[in-house]
Length: 391
Ligand code: FES
Ligand SMILES: [Fe+2]
Image 1 (tube, rainbow, N blue to C red):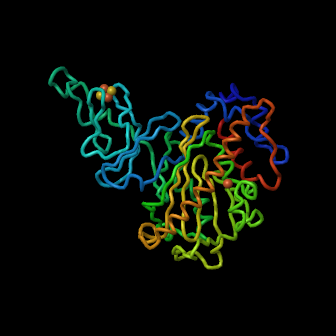
Image 2: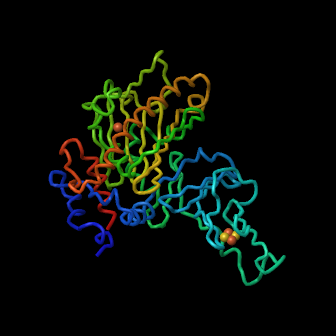
Image 3: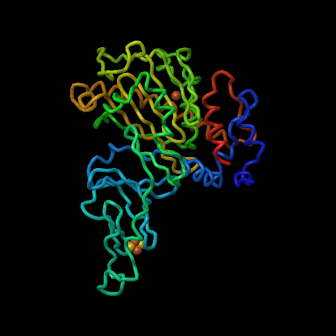
């Protein structure tokens, strides 16, 4: 019997994966229980490919960035040869968290407790006084066995993907269904042109709720008329279609009327191989568990989630344009500012609503809720992914 059943009734979990007409959503425990979250951390965050940041945030050699994922201390490093590596952020001596703040390392990462030091490749290079006063190495201790523990990683669309337990299939295979879906309008050679904007390319929002609400909400367009009346005025509910990836790893929605118009009628340059007959298509796909992607003919964004605990999540928005000029020149600056503001306003509207769902999950009267047979299919798809992977 799986350990999840000590926390959640088997019946309550089984019903999630029934056909949508009979299903209920994930039970309240999945949003309010700390004990449940420990199982989720292992099954959904350690066993799967997840996102922990973007390469653009550590552009230069020696840049380091710690991140704690539901309490697991991790460390992202840009090495001397400009590669990105991810390590467990703990000193191999007494287990102190090694790097506490993002910054630049000139030579070594030095532990604050007894000064053991590691180079940018994670190699343990100094163990002061390990053999007694002024004896810094001893034959009984083989330093090479106590390097930082590296985590399997892969960079895709600037996203730093990791698989902590090294048990998933290769990332290339994992992402292939989504990658192939996009090939018909966003071919691989265009994806290489993405540039992160340095000025208006990032914002973050605090969401006082479980991380799953952000994903569920992103999967559906049903809420558009009421939560985003501004957006709905030009991209209406009826212009959207559902996306449910198979094998079940992603879900979301697309629109057929993406045609941005900002004051002054300025436009960003478009991806050169995005076909003309598909230029009004934009897709919003959540790649489970923790990143929401938006692709358009003239920009791409990745909105990734940093779950802090079962009821608090930090949302990070990273915005990219086609080529460096669109991303960083003054020519497009005011347009970037407007686009940034537009997304920030929309995401804030969503944060308000998902925080209310968190409050609702404290009600003993709630049974996971009912899905609309026509509108909630991608959300149900995500719930099935969660329920199926917990066992
Ligand atoms: S715990 Fe890091 S040097 Fe002792
Ligand atoms: Fe929304």
